[in-house]
Amino acid sequence: MTTMNEGPATRALAGLGLVLPPPPVPKGVYKPVVIVERMVLVSGHGPLLPDGRLIKGRVGRDLDEQAGKEAARQVGLAILATLVAGLGSLDRIGRVVKVLGMVNATPDFTRHPAVINGCSELFAAVWGTDRGIGVRSAVGMACLPDDIAVEIEAAFELA
Amino acid sequence: MTTMNEGPATRALAGLGLVLPPPPVPKGVYKPVVIVERMVLVSGHGPLLPDGRLIKGRVGRDLDEQAGKEAARQVGLAILATLVAGLGSLDRIGRVVKVLGMVNATPDFTRHPAVINGCSELFAAVWGTDRGIGVRSAVGMACLPDDIAVEIEAAFELA
Amino acid sequence: MTTMNEGPATRALAGLGLVLPPPPVPKGVYKPVVIVERMVLVSGHGPLLPDGRLIKGRVGRDLDEQAGKEAARQVGLAILATLVAGLGSLDRIGRVVKVLGMVNATPDFTRHPAVINGCSELFAAVWGTDRGIGVRSAVGMACLPDDIAVEIEAAFELA
Image (cartoon, rainbow over all chains, first blue to last red; front, side, top):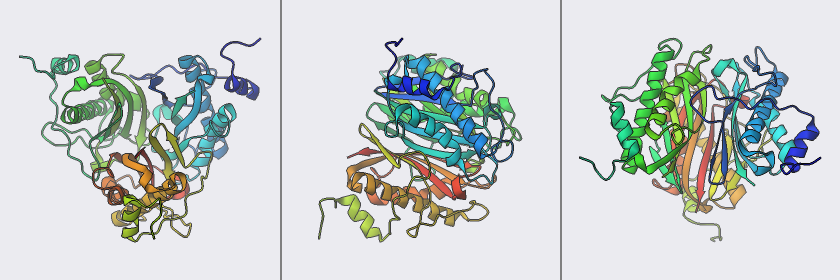
């Protein structure tokens, strides 16, 4: 059975067999998502798991590159959960505009792009390799809230 | 006596009994505020006090969480001073769109959202709990200019 | 001989006698530049040299303030190379809107604005001291990809 919300992005996510976490509840004075004209902005998200736990620790010490990349994919899934909750469907997004990927990393860590690809590859799988990929910065932070491994904020354009 | 610039946001700020610092003077090659179409962007601001001094130090070592939150509120006041200087009135702002809160924090600090709430609660008091709250990221930096405790940049939409 | 692409910004860059590096090739899943309505967003760029090498190291330890500033100028040149490759000409840019300057810095470093001025002064020389200067944040990161000394992302408005 199909629903009115079911377009290519929704079907692509279903095809990946991934489970969205519950949409994150703000832990401070902010909104998860804001729509301003044709732009959709989402707050910094962490690697929220379906059971409500967060992937914590420092990449380069507690998590290796692959575990960091999986944490970034989980951040991406949390962002998708926020978009579904806020917009009703992933198909209301026309394209990814911008990703800021922030890694909780050891001072000698240098593989931030490979880590943040965990989120970017998810978005590319959902919206395609043109519309699913935007500009990006991937950088290393001194520390992150709740010691989460990765925090990502993003901007999208409405379809 | 009321003035033409006095709307709800101006009155709300007056009701808080807080003193704005002088609008910050850029310490580099940038503008304090830029208007682009209907968006108002402000540069990264520090915790500037009315006497011109800055709140300095690292949260988690030199400042505890509460002192960090007060520093973030002071950053918010500096941003308000920039908006008044650049736009003429806080009432020209229709809503808060985005806040990026950067905390000068020890590597083990994990309470960035509580710190940045110092700014976000101020904005919510000025513009209300719907229009005064936008998306946000709150993260930990290795270091900040002049060793300031908090730096925040923000985006608003014109009324 | 003049070309159709040669306007004031192109001529200003030529007058500086600086050599653009080749436009950077993405090292992850992102685009170097995205145009959304009238805004031009560029990904985080590093200090790419004309021979393809990157300026690496930590400012405050491996690079002093002046070397950091030169690295930031080199990041600015890499951004210009991306704009030329993506838009055809620097003269398609109407103004600089925003710069986020991220310095790979020691924990005690405090002169981020002076470092990032290396990029901002370049943009001001290319587009002029009004249109070439926007809002900015300059901050210190725990680490950056490939241990680059500076990473900068930026937003411009089309002419």
